[in-house]
Image 1 (cartoon, rainbow, N blue to C red):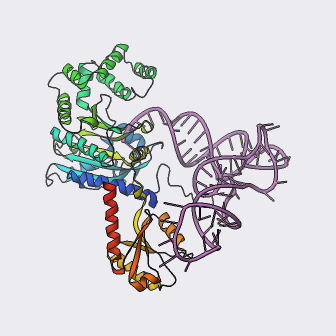
Image 2: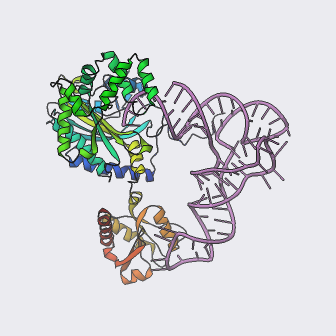
Image 3: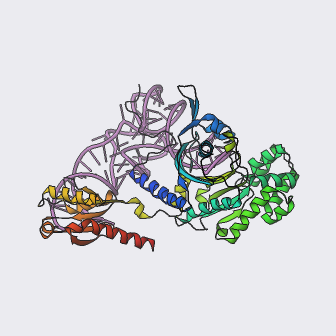
Length: 445
RNA sequence: GAGGAAAUAGCUCAAUUCGGUUAGAGCAUCGGUCUGUGGCACCGAGGGCUGUGGGUUCAAGUCCCAUUUUCCUCCCCA
């Protein structure tokens, strides 16, 4: 027999956002927006569906073949639910190449889907801040992107003990593999896959993995020597005209002269899964041992626009997922308690005041930009009314009983501080506004 | 795609080695003590086909099979 009712569970790997969850999400995305805009980035958005081919060309085999939700529409078009934003950004840039003034600084906050087995820090539907700088090849833009990444985390109160930006370069990586390790293109592929595991896997397993791919002990030892070398030494071992080496060297030159040095480090194991990266690539890691996942991943892509137009527009950017980020915030205790409140005022009610008076008060508050709700429970004990307000996350209550009404006054009560102030009835909105501002100042200092 | 663990009230968990009356508690919710100041106390109430479907048995929350979901690990990645 069929089940009597439909399941209330959201689809596997997706989440419902109730007000409580939505508040947290809105809070951190609004801070991200401010940071992005402080660097001159403008918000964009694209459709959730793109032609399958937009992703097929460059996103990496695994993502497209195994993890994309795709289907044929009624017009026989092969469509995919976006698993990432960058191809859409490339398409949008290519579409308006002639009229866009370069460089373009864009960001978006959007949801994506990947058909995967959900686990810690990874779901099937996730949201992501995506930020890209297009049309500028110089290292200043690489630096800027790293700087935005660091600023984003610092805006939440994170410091260098909590995260690390790990930087490498695709071209440099290839040069080192070829010149120092003398690896063939085939070997390079297998090594790339294993490199990521080097620090995570037990040593024997790591070696076993490599040997299975036909990598000799000689080369494994060579790899170890490479990983042991600081960037400067490695740079000395490859030809001085290596573009990747120069890019990496210049980027670190800037980083060392500015405030970013404590947050960044060179890490030869950062390769990134997406196929379209060409130059500098980076990953931001949570240093909390409980949340060993990359918070961001990003890098430079030189050839993506070329999919759509015969033009060379280089871009650099990153994606910053909400699932791992929330783990990051929770893990480091960076979600302030006020986030769980909303700015709504409860108007408490008394039987010795006509209900119409409360409607008038509520309308007045709304007109002045203060959201309010009139208490509507059966039980009108004051304690009950306050409890209701607090559990609903409201920050203020207004008390206007018969006595206050006669005197032309009202009492505003800050629910979290449990303090109250008397105000003239017609200045209620202003008084709440002022008190909220005080509160904000206190939390900022 | 591979492996492991789990699923009992809205939430967190109980339910006596080996199946045995009517499946309990805390928290939360609602009502009351108590309509002028909420985090306390006391009293009371509602809420369960024990994830779903089969099977074994006189008897299943408990044992077996399947299935779904959740969590974890791997692959991969944000």
